Every structure is written in structure tokens, then in C-alpha cells.
Image (cartoon, rainbow, N blue to C red; front, side, top):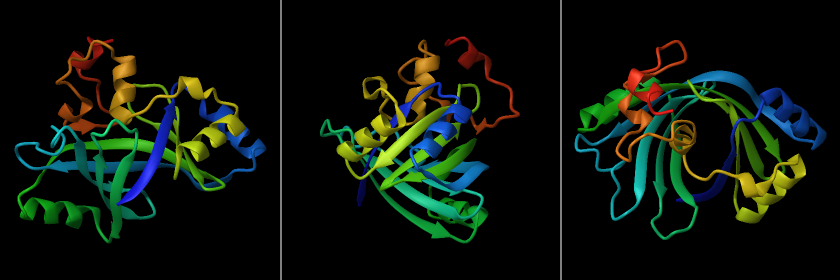
Length: 202
């Protein structure tokens, strides 16, 4: 499986991020687009609940220009690394139907917006999710490459957030209980109404 190091900087205005990226010589590979994703698991949720202390997920994502299936696995060795297997498929709907046919199920469908930039061997994503401020994610093959990219862009590496987008939600909704995640929201969309239980967790 491919290993990647990724960190986030929260509450980053994207216009400001674009100016920093341009000054650093980064190249915009894909402009901002709407993406939809389905998060898939076994009926007993054995992947997201953690296997031997690790967290895993299966995702089908329509990225606008392609559809991908991804398996992600976060190791339980204390290192902030993520391993993943990803491949492209021809149809979002057919991929979901395939997983359902072999006994897995979709427990949440989500909308996000993303813009992708390349800086040397590092990828920078400008991300938007419903009901939280925009942020950026820097992803690279090593801790050193990610740190160097952050410093080149003028971001303070001591202020990084590690973890998935769900960790970002917990930053803005600090009263969320350990068992609560946005995965419990069946349809996480930009035009959807924020659930009352989530509003109460701010």
C-alpha cells in the first residue's frame, strides 16, 4: 500500500491560499469542483470502528473528472501515516452497486468541494465541507517534504492538525461525544440543513 503523510491547516481563506501557492510556483492541477462520495462498510461497521486499534474505510468518490475507489488504513503504531489503495472505475453508481452486492453498505453520502495544486512532489488541497470554515491539506511522501512545503507557503507547522476531515469537525464542534461523527449524518450536503444535534455540540 502507498504511504502518505498529510496535515491540515484550518480556517484558511482560499483566496489567500491561492496567492501563496502562486508565489511559491505551485501549479493548479484541478480547479474547485463539487465532489460526492459514499463511505462504505460492513453492516457491523467493523472498518470504521477499528480493527486491532486501527481505523479503515472504503470510499467511492466522484471527483468530477474521474471516479475512484479507495481503501484507507491508519496504522495503530503511533505514527501519523496513512496507507491507501486507490483505483479508478467507470461509474459511481455501479461501484456502489458492486459493494452492496457483496454484502457491504453505504452508511453516509457526502458532498465536498476541492481544488488541487502541485508543488514539487507535494499535493495541496483546498477543501470545503458543510458547516465548517475552509481549510487546506498538504500531502506528501514524507514528513520532511510536507514540512518544507508548509514553510515555503508561510504556514506555521506547529499549528497543523493531523487526522481526517472528521478531526476538523471535532475542532469546531468540541462537545461531540466520542461515539459521534459526521458519518452518522446520512446525507452531508451543502444545501442540507445542519442537524440540531450537531449545532448543539459547538
